[in-house]
Image (cartoon, rainbow, N blue to C red):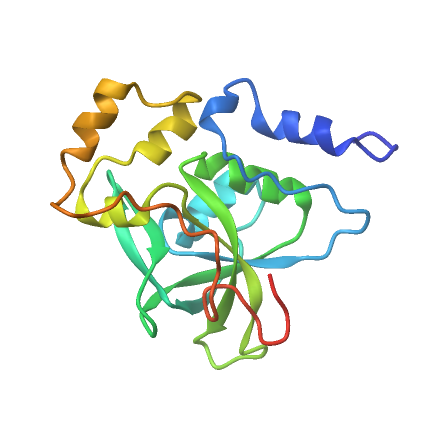
Length: 202
């Protein structure tokens, strides 16, 4: 690694790789002094052997059983997708303490831009300390309501393609909505137990 502090912009380009349209739009910035942070996983990354491969580790990582509250899982093709849920709804998975910004880049690359990085309150279920803390997770980047209802998600399509949906397609997509239903917008607000800590806005 270079001895000088790398440019955050150059680091972002390196993290994106050649196929930057297939990578996550949520690339962590380069901090002056890195502090390890827990990530909550709920899909393929809950398997230590897969996480080991993604992070290019010598040994299998240690994951703690955990849950997040106020979310639910839907399906994006064959993959699970975390979306906003009703108050009290729980999603169980595992949490891992990421030790470097390079590992954060690799996780973002693996998740692709179909998922966005979001802060969340992680509650551990193994009876060990700490019992809960604020960490990160990858949520579905498109319209969670459309995904749940099995409708065409034009927000994710436009983000991945880098262009607006053609008008004739937009009309057809709206036609799949129920009568009187308005197109939903991705929710950028993170309510309590979906990432906001008491006394601290995230």
